[in-house]
Image 1 (cartoon, rainbow, N blue to C red):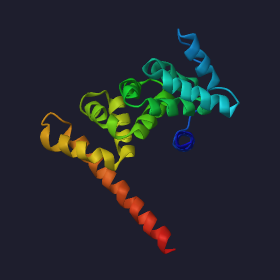
Image 2 (spheres, one colour; image 1 turned 90 degrees about the vertical axis):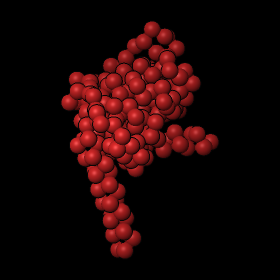
Image 3 (cartoon, rainbow, N blue to C red; image 1 turned 120 degrees about the vertical axis):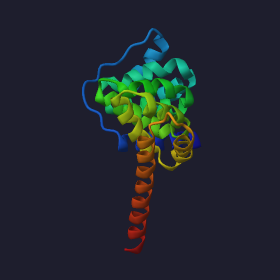
Image 4 (cartoon, one colour; image 1 turned 30 degrees about the vertical axis):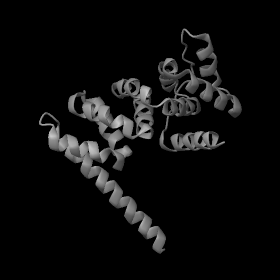
Length: 196
């Protein structure tokens, strides 16, 4: 029951922070069972979609690339369910998602970034590596993702700032400052809401 509630909560969060538009072509894989579950992500039947997410999570790593391909379909609902599955698959999803941060497709980049942000702390090391060595587009997306992760990213960002002479120190410092600024703004908004 708790898993279903957190699955629904994850879906709501993803729909709230990610916007996607475009066509609804369904990506295909060589595994007919995975294809069937991926197809179900596009269904109008919510129960069928949720069952597909659970089955794809159960498939683990072999489902990651097909799930990421859903992002390029432009179908917001199916992409949201794909993101939920990737979040539940967890750490194995990180490397394939970080590779999409440099995609030519802005929608794919945004879904990858937001999915990584929701995976959170386990993605921080790879995102820092992209900030230090990635292309311009990859760096931009990695920076945004680290800021979205927020406070859980601070220990590794501070470690990088203080121990890696080859790090992009200006960028790392800027990310840290942005996280603190976002936290301070949120605290002020919370205080204002409480006092009104």
